Amino acid sequence: MNRFHVALRAVLAAAVLWTGLGAGPAWCAGLPKKGDTLPAFDLPAPVADKAREYLDIRQERFRLAQIPCRLLLLEVIGVYCPQCYQQAPLFNTLFNRIETGKLKGQVKMLALAAGGNETEIAYLYEQVRYSFPIVADPKFAVHKLLGEPRTPFTLLVDPGGKVLYTHMGVIENIDAFLKLINELVR
Image (cartoon, rainbow, N blue to C red; front, side, top):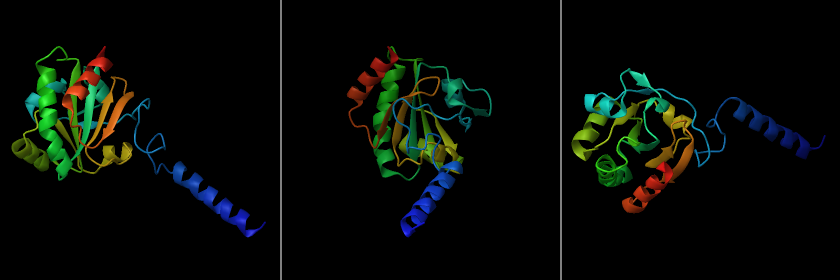
């Protein structure tokens, strides 16, 4: 066997070992994309009663499939992310438009604070004034399952966890995004 074959075998063995140990997300292709199905994961219920009521969550931990809706907007945020702070008022507007329009009850919004704890989430509610629920992911467990996206990372998923849309970064055109949401709910 020549050096090339020895090196090739080493690279292939490392690749098999890496994927076999679960080093990447469930689909082993990076971030979730349209058509993927999210892996099942548990989230802590929001602390605020209003947020629990909005999501219709009564237990201490829940899965996305337990949220009664036709479409879920899941936004992965960073507690110290300046782009997330920029997007927050835009998504608050989106939330208010959904909740006062024909999509109320059909579309739910939820933020996942990657690395965030309850104290930091309380700060977000107070200072940034998020209108929709935020749940903690203090050890980045769910963030890792999602391929460790930069923030903000927005997903639209159906009740079964099928990814219908993803977007990395700030979504500035809320009108166009709301139009897309309406089309996906039909």
